[in-house]
Length: 159
Image 1 (cartoon, one colour):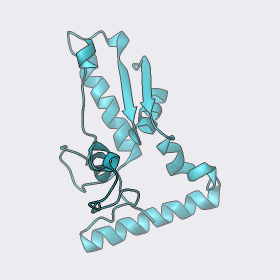
Image 2: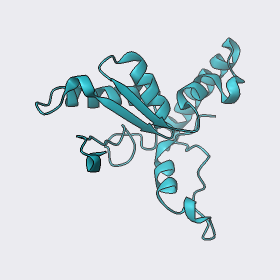
Image 3: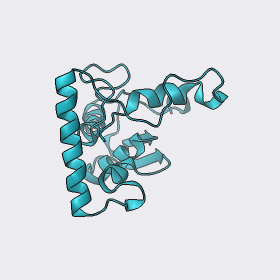
Image 4: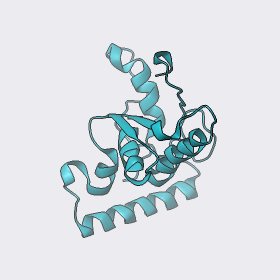
């Protein structure tokens, strides 16, 4: 976007990438929506920014968080996402909405809280699946680059 003349701000959401904070490798939809809103706070107060033209981009799982942010923050005038699915919806309703009922949501909260207790007791945080770690030497080329490095930093397991 910067190469095309847009003033751009890129950030690593809390607990991921080069941001500080513990635990590492943790995703929190509420905190990550707040991260997007904090970026909008910052941009809205820069003299060289037209606050009526602020847009956000969310890629992969962050696309769902960008959508959620755009739903609640009227300062955002355009939202672009590149994602296979809305990760926020999947977290709440399960894949293909198979857990979209009160009992399933309650059981998920119980599992999340039990995992938090286990993580606290052990001092280690269980990571989610979905990204092969370590990456095999014969892995396809597309997994050897940015996708693997990005995905490895983004997810925490609660099962």
